[in-house]
Image 1 (cartoon, rainbow, N blue to C red):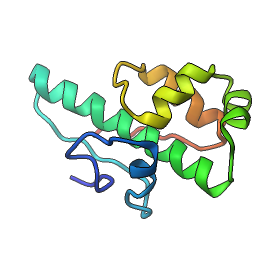
Image 2: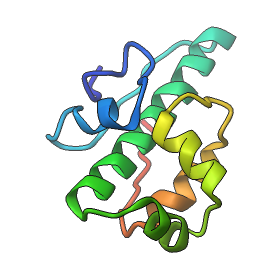
Image 3: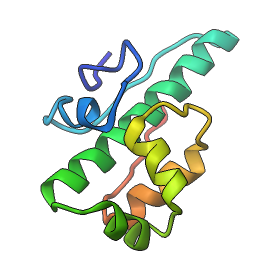
Image 4: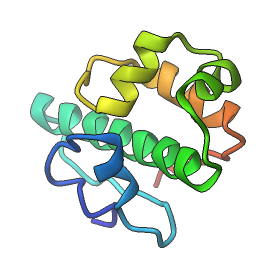
Length: 110
């Protein structure tokens, strides 16, 4: 399984996410069909998206107020992303934020 170094445990902050693997930025998920496997896959995807946002903010020295404007999210959602505590954030919200940050997302199903 290839992912950032924090994928096996929940990322606890945006700074932790930014410390992940700077390599390919790809994540490969190969889990069974069980509910726990699906939940783990969603969590890993969310963590990868948060890591991408963390890297983007750090690389571009984006402030919180700039991020809310550029990503078209409210301050509460940004804080949820920065703190990486709210795993209830939808994949949709995170995907949209990553795309608004100018990142590309690709999905491969094999």
